[in-house]
Length: 310
Picture (cartoon, rainbow, N blue to C red):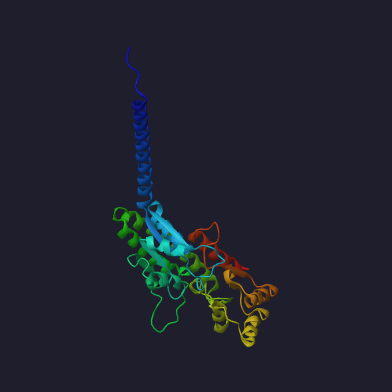
């Protein structure tokens, strides 16, 4: 009959079993962590100043990008936005950074200027657009200019291709698809121009001017009014009365209003237009909830056409 194992031997066997099980568990956890890390690391980390450029990048990069948009809430004003530590951490990990430029989203430059990820590829949309001609006044809202967005799409595809050469052809193809749809929007602008070339409109801020100018429309709003509203300054009583007279005198066919940064004086203009039965076309600076860039811009162009046809 075999001799029963001693209590000491039982203790040693049990300890060895526990050690073996612990080792197996550690190996399994490490494998999962490596798999998770590998699953996220193959994507190109992209930081965009607003969800406008974030969405455009997502359409070009598809499943190969992980995009973070710093500003995605319509209540946030990019002109005055103050970055936080989470923004800085996200930016520090980005391979590609996309800003609008032209003084619109300076918080990106401030973070990069502090040494936060100086190795990232930086795309400045205003510079890519070519709208910085010396001697001309800059309208920094270049995402309302479809030819400029086409150039920006090509630049984004090139940056993503540099970060991930294996998928460069896919990025180029996706950018070409996007540009084809932008051409459709330009055709809609041309249709508006054919029917309404030279007609007068009003604005509250310069946000939509690339769109309205490409549609052949003439902005009659005093420059002093739209610039003051954009910069958050009070408008003088004289300029305000000149602006309101455009609507009471029915001198314009529509008002294109930046609904994202509305204030008391711009609301007076909106009310004056409504009282005169002049159509109001609201626009925003960032993507409305549930919209992608192309769907958003299609809605803007269609709303403008509908207002002018009334």
